Image 1: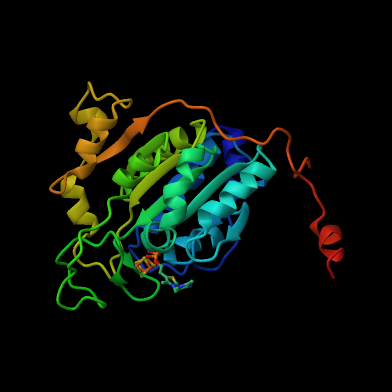
Image 2: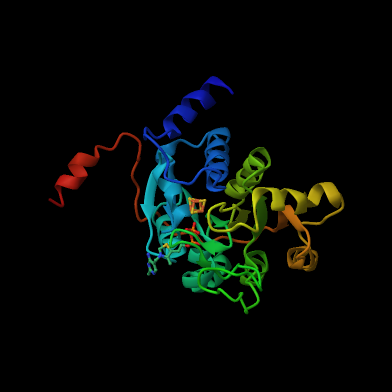
Length: 286
Ligand SMILES: Cc1ncc(C[n+]2csc(CCOP(=O)(O)OP(=O)(O)O)c2C)c(N)n1
Ligand code: SF4
């Protein structure tokens, strides 16, 4: 780590006694990877806005020292979109669960990518609604017995990568929370991509998902660039083909193309955010 990275890393650390995630939760790995990616990109915390969901995954906002907004359930993307339109110089991240993104928030997940707004959206996919104790989510595999489907889930799951391809995202990748270093590189590529970047992260929930565990994923994941050196990230059909597979799971960048982005003609907010005295601002509303 360079001296600059060391001091940035310090800035991103939050002084909290403990994290509320269960031991072994995949979300720890995502937090580490996200923080490392921001440090390595040398983006200072005052330029980052992290919009989080409401579930366990949304806790990430409490553990990283940057600007954070906890959205209503399913409303990460409209908030993130609005923030980027207000100040295009900010690095805007959305981080939430599969329940948040592909159930109650599905309309936004289908409609935001086509604007190609320059934000990065991560779904921490544990195949359950975990904060509310493990009910079926839209990504729960068919046949799985859960709290809300004791006889097994009857519906076909939603595949977030396929959904993002259909919705027009210009950067689409999959990561695994157990592979922190590889995730850092993919998150960096997503943040530096100019346009709507989506990452579906497999983040195991050892408490409510006893099937799709860390070990289960470790046996089934591989990196597209390792197994298929000729893989073309501009080929949408190839991306669909790999995304649809259910016996093994490709990781890495599935799809990436350049397209014009949505940007405001002039910023709605033109403030230097470093060193603002928030007390003065707050007093205006008291
Ligand atoms: C409008 C609304 N509906 C329902 C809830 C209850 N609720 C809180 S978290 C959650 C599920 C979260 O699941 P997911 O987004 O997958 O996150 P995870 O906890 O698995 O990380 C639900 C349904 C809520 N807070 N707001
Ligand atoms: S319930 Fe699952 S997702 Fe939530 S903190 Fe525990 S392990 Fe993580």
